[in-house]
Image 1 (tube, rainbow, N blue to C red):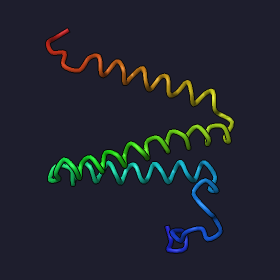
Image 2 (image 1 turned 90 degrees about the vertical axis):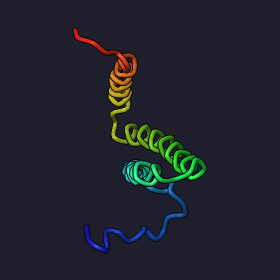
Image 3 (image 1 turned 30 degrees about the vertical axis):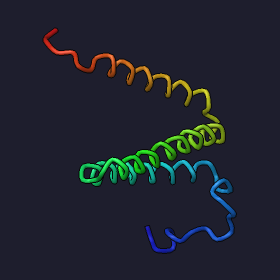
Image 4 (image 1 turned 45 degrees about the horizontal axis):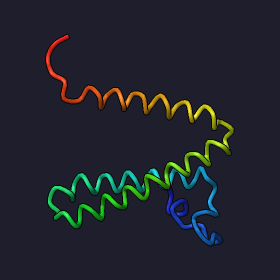
Length: 105
């Protein structure tokens, strides 16, 4: 990535003027940075600082979900995206249900 690639787009009033694909990728990058911050800084922070970090993660998780839905519609894969989310949620629910189980099969 060059310095020119990292320059902000000058003619946009706010982030909603960006294409949904760009918003989605931007939000994913922010979520990654916030998650990294929570993992590294959270261990040595007080509860108030950690609460602010988690609140920011929650906010950007919501924005990321909205941008993903918009991008899926623009890309013409809305129903497939919904199905992929269902599969992912099913795997997550299964994982959570099995947490704490010990022993052998």
